[in-house]
Length: 304
Ligand SMILES: NC(=O)c1ccc[n+]([C@@H]2O[C@H](COP(=O)([O-])OP(=O)(O)OC[C@H]3O[C@@H](n4cnc5c(N)ncnc54)[C@H](O)[C@@H]3O)[C@@H](O)[C@H]2O)c1
Image 1 (cartoon, rainbow, N blue to C red):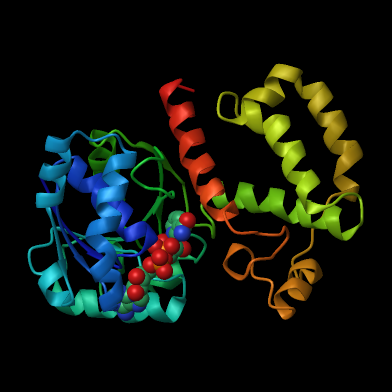
Image 2 (image 1 turned 60 degrees about the horizontal axis):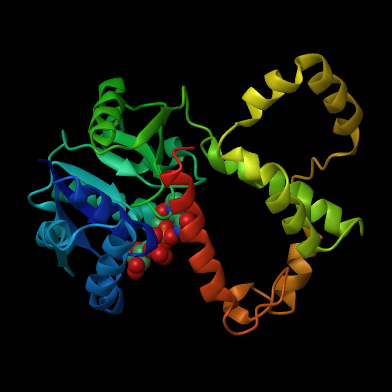
């Protein structure tokens, strides 16, 4: 059993806490927002239910998680620190400075950043060798993958240690050879989204049609056959000829993204504002949340 201090009890922090406590680890979790801490027990309960934990296992996991409004209290016993605060470099820097002031130099710090450069995240550290990119996927208590990356300064043995610890939890870990923004998964996801926005912008189809195409075609096979295996399966000669024909017309935009900018300027932020790329009538958000979890569970149960 290891002792973890988690900073940030939001969407990711609470799920990471559940994943670790379900594996028998002790977790002290801190958030600067009192309302987030107030809602934590309910969110932990929901996450444990989604994992299918028995009453006994839930009770044990819950007993291993302690929440605190004081950062130093969360960090005092920590053998590992996880930062899961918002994706802004200034916030990461502020929190990491507070972490370094509170723990000894040999305590590894795992950053859950999604797309920031890990080397930049660690640039303010007195001991940057202890920073490891440990990117969990949402919901972290359900999704098996955790991506691991070193910054330019990370001590390699700390990446191995994270790999062993997460492997023992039943997670599927992959290691990047070096730090790139977005790790692997988000780069792939957002390359797809960029092209989807491009198709809508070019008036080839509407946003709902993009989702129909993905969900009813290659989305069905992605959980069982990855893009590289599929490329070999259909043949690299065919793959090369498709890429050669298509590549010149695919988006390579580095921004701006006018389709998104116009929606945002009109106050359309997606589900939260009732409209975005699609319309969000009452009930759609709950339906998506249900489909998301049910789909993940179905795929996990079928062993794909
Ligand atoms: N949301 C996702 O799907 C997802 C997936 C993978 C990784 N991530 C990454 O995980 C990190 C956290 O994302 P999230 O979605 O959980 O965000 P979130 O907004 O749900 O949670 C962040 C929490 O940090 C707290 N916080 C902010 N400043 C703080 C401070 N100075 N001290 C202590 N607590 C503070 C906030 O009150 C909030 O509860 C980000 O780096 C994000 O990119 C997110």
